[in-house]
Image (cartoon, rainbow, N blue to C red; front, top):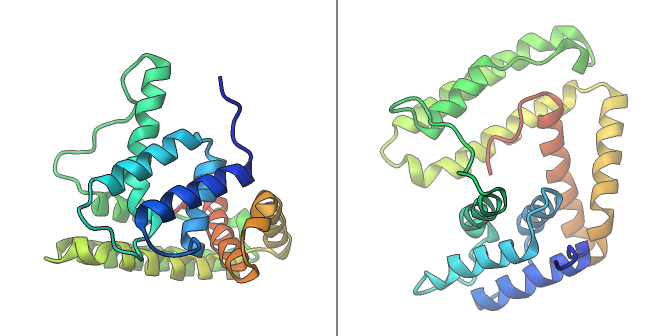
Length: 224
């Protein structure tokens, strides 16, 4: 069995294969780096990531020179699921959604049922405002789902909704929790820092902190 790739080897290989296959760009964007960090931290093997990238790009007659790595995420996840099924010798895990329920409807339902634990807040009286913000976000997502061009707008709109919520959550954090999250993220990203320009590392760090804040409050990421 091959030894797992080190963070530096993992990044170099993903960067090289993606940029060569895409045929444009010299470096990965901060969003791309953040995605590679998540794949590595989740334990998705390098060969699985590379097969997902190749499967995505080989199926396109013309690859835009600025296509983000996120376009390969679905194929990477499918390849990872297939590998786990093969290793386990069983059917892929996962339940079926209620009849007729879309991903946007499930996301809206998650936001409507969410509430922050008061122990996570700097002051308990912030809970009401956060719940109201989550309900408003759910309504916005429901309206998006009813729009005729929902698929074209969904990713960008949900990312904006998530950013707004996380900004509110960050402001509601106790100082000690905020410092703990930032230290945790800084330590997790330390092995990757030499592969990134300073500005890219800072953006990747900020994205990772926002994601971790959502997890801290039990909300989790809204966008992929």
